[in-house]
Length: 241
Ligand SMILES: Nc1ncnc2c1ncn2[C@@H]1O[C@H](COP(=O)(O)OP(=O)(O)OP(=O)(O)O)[C@@H](O)[C@H]1O
Image 1 (cartoon, protein in one colour):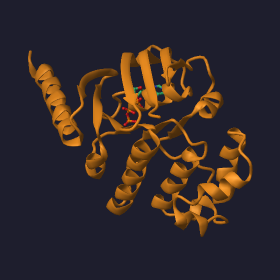
Image 2 (tube, protein in one colour; image 1 turned 120 degrees about the vertical axis):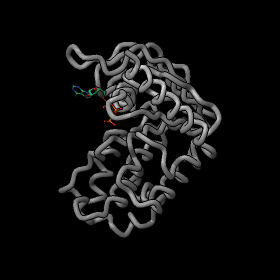
Image 3 (cartoon, protein in one colour; image 1 turned 180 degrees about the vertical axis):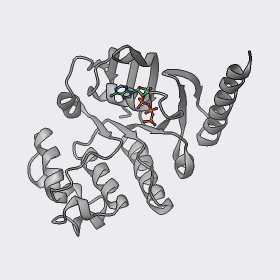
Image 4 (cartoon, helix red, strand yellow; image 1 turned 135 degrees about the vertical axis):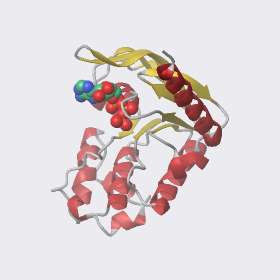
């Protein structure tokens, strides 16, 4: 079954400044939806609000069910998973213990850690390694593994590809594309620019200054063009006296 994330009228404020204003969007399962926009456009705020870790007004629906009042741990158990910007691992714990923290949050049995590392065999060889000594690519594989432990229905990826080698970018992009195609997961990938993950993008939104300015159903290249067009329009507007 294909899953779905829908947000309606999502607004995020930090003090008096508005990061996201009345955003509506739908992320259908079975495809990879990108969220592109410059730094500060509100991409992280949107994903964090969908996960429940920043206060927001508006509604979040998971497979049609309103989860807006659930706290992050309950949303995670309901099937929303996040790969946060900056990874947010415990660098002084080893790989297995980092995964065990998520297993406990999700109330999974201890065997869940062992099963989880099947996805990236390199992690099995690193189970007892402190996270701080892993390469950037290995750390990101661990974060993705952690996010997938609960077999999520919705996967929120916040700048997952930043700073990674092209080979790792391809491997991670293929992993999320398979999750969408095989398991009907609703994947949303926020990136400042698409780069090597462009080929797995099915559709997307351009976000600028906290608002959706374009929706594109025609894949990664078309989304790139929509993004450039949106930024160009915005620049022209700024330059017009
Ligand atoms: N914790 C915070 N406190 C105050 N303002 C914040 C906070 N987090 C984000 N902002 C502001 O909210 C706006 C949207 O930021 P957000 O991080 O959601 O954008 P983004 O598109 O993810 O950008 P980036 O690529 O830089 O992460 C920006 O103006 C940012 O400065």
